[in-house]
Length: 286
Image (cartoon, rainbow, N blue to C red; front, side, top):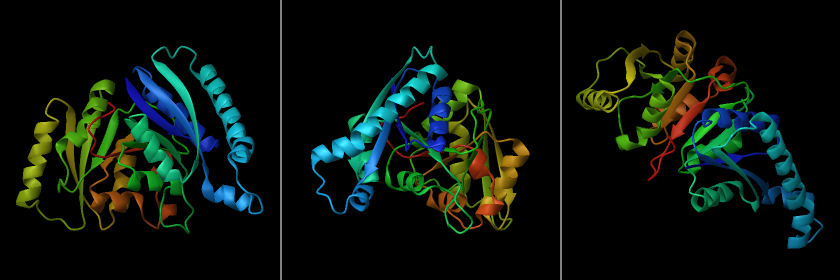
């Protein structure tokens, strides 16, 4: 039984992520926890002249949120009336967003967070919404970020950008191999370098480790030369019709270049292609 956390702010974007999660995990036994967090900052701004008693918080923030969550459950029942293997629960909390996420990840033994993300404007330096960026960088839990325009399709082609500098245990890749098996997918391991240079001894060794690890899966290596990693990823996603991008959160070099940059208007994969960020945990969600 896998435990999936679905944070929601009741936007279309977060509803899209919920729909994606239901399809992505539809043949698995899952507990889905739909969570809404009222931020402390919002409470303070809206009620500067009021003393925030527990009764006031319950009446003004928690009860309306619970009603909206019940409405989401109704939408889910219409969307997927025969989800025998899937159970849905609602959670409400108030306080600091990341602290609430961490608390629920620990208490519910969450295997994966699935969250909607909306492309930032060209003036912002990240392609993720603030909440999603914070979760990916500050919460040690596998996170599947579902962009605003993404619709579920069977992930037949999965891109895995890597610089072959494995700063993580290979076990962190277990969710990828499970997805490959579950959907009969193909993994495209992509190495992008700014200059056309051969792999050093350490990179070559790590490449061989990946070959051994994915030995029973369909995979291939691809080598691209581009001064900007995000542009190379864009070209690769378009040329191969990639359905999902997977990354390891600890691999900050690639991770930051792909997800955190300024030329947002030139990059489209962040609005269409879900990306799975993996963190080392004792459990995995595959």
